[in-house]
Amino acid sequence: MNRVFDEESISSTRTRLTSVIPEEGVTRERYLGVRIVLREESFCSADYTTDLQVSSVLPLKMSRRSFTAAFKLSICRSAEEFGNREAGRRFGVDESIVRRWRTSKTMIEKMPRKKKALRGRPAKWPQLEEHLIAWVREKRAEGHAISTLALRLKARSFAKEDDIGDFTASPSWAYRFIARHDVSVRRHIHISQHLPDDMADKITRFQSYIIKLRREHEYPLSRIGNANQTPLTFNILRQTTIAVKGERTVTINTAGHENYGFTVMLTCTADGGKLPPYVVFKRKTLPKDKFPAGVIVRVQQKGWMDEGLVQDWVHMVWSSRRDGSLSRQRSMLVLDAFRCSKTDDIKALLHRTNTDLVIIPGGMTSLLQPLDVSINKPFKDGLRRCWSDWIISGEKTYTRSGRIRKVDLPTICGWIVKVWEEMPSDIIKRAFLKCCISNSMDGTEDDIIWEEDAASDISSESVCNFFEISCTQTNRKG
Image (tube, rainbow, N blue to C red):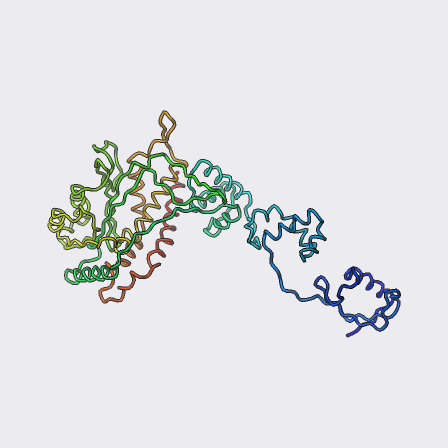
């Protein structure tokens, strides 16, 4: 619908048109995103007092555009040299956008060059995050590894000091904090075990033998066990740490005892039961220190299991169940192809304890050994958390040259007992099921071994929950 403007309206329209169409020869229908529809009856450049009918001035529908950080910085450099309006005209963007980019230039320079937007909510507790990022930088400068869990626990500590009641330090908050403060999580590369070419055939034979024994002897789940040796060092370093982005070298502070190792032999049963850990230190004589209850300590010159220690483990751990009935009731023990586990003396000893020995085929422990599949990793993660807390804030002693002495044996045995006792039984049960050792006899669960995430779901969720609770309780006690 057309409207007829009076002389005053025509004058204001002329001023607006002059600002919209500054140069002669520019198309009136489209300029800077504005569509102008004119209906002229008598239009003269020298006389604007004639009747001018303007039907409408409508905004032009344009698709939204996004620009990379590199493009924005190039416009900022051009604007610094030629001015905001000229830079916007050259690059085809509005002057107000150029002004906004120049105001945010410092933030844009920190963005990746191909990133187009910096989305995300601002920090709800900026003062808490300032204290936390300062703590992170201080610990990283000292070479300490910081996990996301340690970050969340420290954030809770700061929140308690600042009387922030509605702060939960959730995992999503931790990763938003990492993104806001230009840090990242760095990880070591893990080299997996090379599986043999006849993998499927070995798995089938292993399953068939397990099912045959279970049908013949009808073992209860509490009588189906697995044991494995886990080598450890006195420097139980974390594999990940929060560090500033762009650092070419990420250092982690250690006590310098990487070459001092020991062995832990863990034993568990298919019903989720856990037998006492068997620890072997690299020594000639057994120390006189008082060790915590729930762990069996032995020494060996090289710090690993030999045939004599395997026999001792059978007597002290496998044959000494709490109910005392293992030697009277038939049981099944699954071991890897370790040389000392297959000697005639070990087989005869297990036979006397009424135990059927099952040896995992060579090269298949990553698929068929429950402790390797789902248990060893969270166990080592728990020890790393204990060691990291000790190296960051624990009581340490130093040599005359200023080096940190390695953690004493009773302390590390206490960590082993604590982490092992707090291991969720659901993880152990699921590990035996995953390895086709405790699965259903009707064949309905035989394919669970091929489900890649079957065990990792519990490991990632249950383990994080129980370690978070245990660490929180430890901090409260401290």
